[in-house]
Image 1: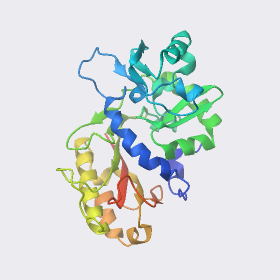
Image 2 (image 1 turned 135 degrees about the vertical axis):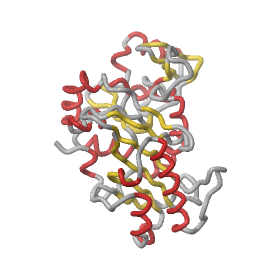
Image 3 (image 1 turned 120 degrees about the vertical axis):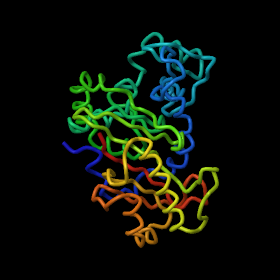
Image 4 (image 1 turned 180 degrees about the vertical axis):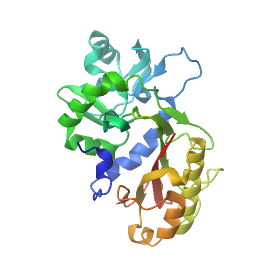
Length: 293
């Protein structure tokens, strides 16, 4: 069965750029998601970054919930936009709650050895046969939807085993908190370090290399390297990358530099041309996937 990783080499220009900019901002909320560590082990964690699970069904879109409309269920805290939505959830939480405890639907549907629990972007969602599914990002959700029923059968069959895997371990400083970098345990053993999309920002938060793609590749590469190191991996462990670039033809010219910072070129890596990233000064954003012990 094909999984999302088998599609990275395909033309992905149809990936939702107009969602990328919005998702980059929204991922800042993931430091509060129920998948991230909390200050106290017994403290209920906030589910899906505080998004209202009922709104996916009633409004047909993701909507940020409000703390004043909170409900605790399944060892999680859930936020809603209104008391009415909270009441709907309390009457039938299994109907409205996302599948697989809110972890990435594609991660659970991977090939058996690579199945894992992964963080999600609340904007990457789908309702299939009356059930809510979330994914790591909009592109992965797009791939999941292409064979949704097959992926659901795979994940439903194996969830009883996958659910016992450790939750994603959010990698902290010096790796930026947003978007998060996570170390995920694989069903077949070992881990993936999934480096959240990195842009050309230095430690002080300043944009490096405005208008200079080479300088931005170098800075992004340093940031990716810092995240890998924090997760116990190195550049040589990178399996593939997912790069959004505003100058794809220029990006292709830096093969040696890219291999230096992002590992050997892989057929599973994808370069996605975009007209603009989250900020006009950004020319490149790279997400890396590395396998380690």
